[in-house]
Image (cartoon, helix red, strand yellow):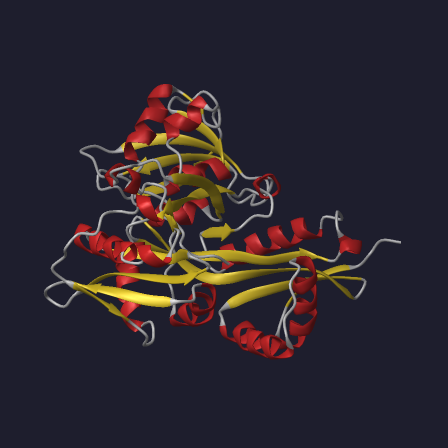
Length: 397
């Protein structure tokens, strides 16, 4: 007899079942007080939470957080996939696949043209169209190797009020990258305060303008920088000088920075420990809607390229398109009847298109890896129109 499978949208009445599965799957235990606090977050944060019931029994779950991210300095609606879990007796029955496909349909309907997630296994989520979009660069710096302390004209103050001041600095900083979150007040309350504890120090310039901050803590002779945000070279130097002021009480500093950070180049001895770690994955949910909002590099002429796109889990994306890029950088995807004979055709899947448009890898790199197929002329034209921006996500969900 075939099982009855039902996907439902969760409400407050499903919180206990959801938390029971989450604690088991992700191997943690919350106190009754923590569970009560978690329920407040469950009900407050905008999200679509989905559960799979098999023959009336709670079997699997996934959450899609309603978030925004910066791409080219613009805000894009994004679905943040989290808390994907299945009870062991229901695993390897395709329930997560059903949840992901269902979630993609709902994201498209909600206008979320992008989706991010933190994978337990990159290969697993690649099957569903997500692709690596950002790396973390992690420095471990012995105290003897820290940047030299230098004089600065502004001042650094410890800050212990709410996050209102940091919000404005962060947003100006995050908009410089592709894939950083637009943080809501609730995000600061529930995610930053809990995941990034410790001291907050803010840099003010001579005009009393806040241009940077760090969130950090010191324990066991290590200084952990949870967040380093700087809007100018002046503030960057000042904040690193401030970190170096802790040299007498620490053995080393550990900090995560964007992949394009060049601190080592500026050090007298650049032989610090650096680790590059693939971090989050992304996928375009709705290619036509995403392209319509995306801005390519502006040039003197327009470009017309043909894109042969495949997407096994979001069939509305699969198709043969004319990508028309105006001189201004605005563009549209026009669906066409497939014609293999057309020149300037570029073939790729949805994950590769995501990596290209977010700037994680360049078209010519992907062509060399045989992840993009097509005439070199067409690939070079696309390459020239993709803005060069670093991807970075200083958050977790």
